[in-house]
Image 1: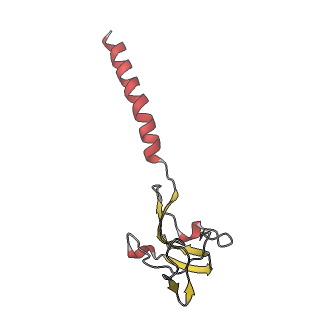
Image 2 (image 1 turned 180 degrees about the vertical axis):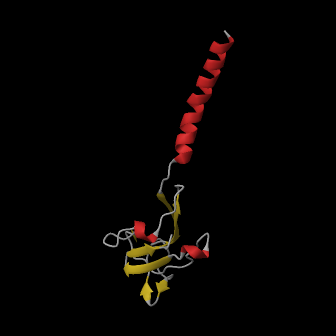
Image 3 (image 1 turned 135 degrees about the vertical axis):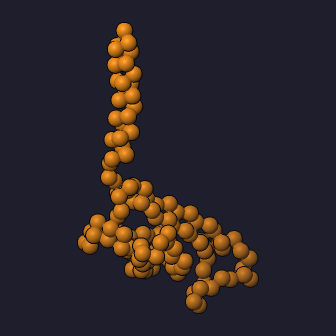
Length: 126
């Protein structure tokens, strides 16, 4: 009777321990992103009010923040991104400026370069 009970307890512990150890031991790279945009200027302003950027009048102006992070437990390295299909972010509107590129560590070596009026490339060392 005691041996049966001991076997059941060990079996139950194994049932809970096996998935935990499996998921803990997995090595995964999982690039995630989130974006948030705030409307700063819209067309509904009075005619007398104009907003210009480098001499061009702007009808709608959004400030957007895009965040990238690795949700996995294995580092994503520069070599993991295909050179023929780089990491690109695009917008429906014109991207006027890129500011405030922040990283959790300087060693990440991130760069954001504007490719076209509505596209940017994102590069990093890891």
